[in-house]
Structure formats: C-alpha cells, structure tokens
Image (cartoon, rainbow, N blue to C red; front, side, top):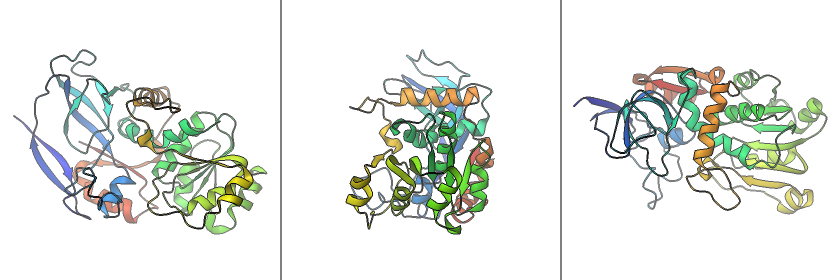
Length: 338
C-alpha cells in the first residue's frame, strides 16, 4: 500500500506534513489523486493565527488543533468502490478537498464531488469549491443585471466576487481596498474600477466615478466595522450583502437612521448557507452551485488565473501561509500542486 502526504497544523503558526497510508475506496466512494488544492486565505489563516472564533468553542469539533486544512481541490479518480456508477477511473473532478495528495470521497447521497472539464486550468479548478462562498452573494442579491455594485475588500473572496458579479451582468462594478496592488488585481477584470478609501471620502469618490451611490454593496472584508462603510455607499432602498466572515461585534450601528430611515436591506450570505438540502426561501444547494461554477469556468465566463499569485508545490505550504499573512501586496490567492 502506497503512502500519501497531507498538510497539518499541530498548533498556531505551525505547518507540518503527515504521511498516511492511501486506503482503497469503500462502497459509494472513490479514491482521488489530487492535482492541486486552494488555500482559504480567510478561514485557514484564522486558524493558523489562532484567531478563529470556533477554536475556543468546546461545542465545535472541526476548528481544533491539530487541524487538517483545506476545502477546495481538483484531482483525478484513481479507483472506484462498489456501487459507483456516476464516475469512472480517470475522471477529473472538483470537491472540497483538504491539502493532501490523495483523498477518499463519498459519492452517494448528498455527495459533494463534481466533474470539471479538462481544459480548465488546474489553479482555476482548484479554487472552485472556495468560490461558492462569494457566489452566495449573487444568490442573495435581489437584482444583479445592470446594477451598480460596490465590493468592499479586494482580498481573495472580494476578487472572486468581483469576477462573479461581472459574469452575471452587474455594471458598473467598483472595488474598494487600501492596498494598491489589490486594486490593480481587481482592475484586471474588464470595466472594473477601484477606490482607495485611505485617499479620501469613499462616498465622494464613488459619486465622482458613477454619479450616485451603489444599488448593491458587498462586504467581503470580514471586518465588523465595514458595515458602516457599506451603509454610506449604498443608495436609499439598496441592499448590503455581508459575504465576509466578521470576527467580532458590530458597534455604533444606528438601525433607525442607517437602516429603517433609508429602507436599506442587509442580507447575510455566508457560503455555508449553500448546503446539500433546500431551505425555505433559499433555493440554492451544492448540486446547483458547484456545477454552475464549473460551467462558468469551462465556458470562460469565470477566470481566476489573473488573481492566483502563487501556484507552487505543496512542500512550500509553510511559506505560503506566512506570505498570505504578512505580504498582502504580494500574496492574494494560493494554489498548491501535488
């Protein structure tokens, strides 16, 4: 039996590698050899740095050290277990995979594994399961086509959201970030313009660009205080969509003047809302979202290549986490090949 390799965080600020015996797939399972996996610069860094809110929650068993990070990968099926009919050996697939060379993936009821076209570049395909998190902002937006959309935070989630809103027909799209390089990465998307909030009042800059405030403002910062910024940029009757993962309490929020008085809608849009089962008033499930994202990538509507700053061998994982943490003008999105 051959050995595989996976990334493990035994404690904060520490990344190591563990060997494991590659198992054979059981009934309704497949064995996948990983092509590449994408790092979540939000959740994984929060655990790596020890600030994730669930680390100290005794009721949560997922976010605990030692932690096996990763939940977005692309690979090729090496073997199939009994009862598997929808896949065959050699199929290329995406799934919410960890950073590991091989994985056993369930393909039965509520499975989360999907085919991906051969021509989709490996780094793009490795990020698609992560893309369902910013994709939730589209699902939760009341209107998209022809709407003026402002996206706060041009980190990885904001960059993917920018590309998704562009693919869905939003226009104009304005990205907001104080890091110049992140604004330049966003401006690689045709028609996207950006604002530097550190160079003056963001609302004045927005109105100078498009002549009004935005129909939709998407917060992709994960910073609780960004809600105040979003409310300043959205028009009366508009919508604020919170797609980041705020780690803290929103303070100084005047619900009367900022919300009721202006008829603004605030909508939560965390990617975990896209589950395996339909929920009341929330139509999307993973079996709708992931195939659609795969179609966007295969058709050319969604390209992530110009935002993936590092595609390296997995042995460079420790350096990648540190780069994402401290070099925000050099590191944006990282995929690791195996």
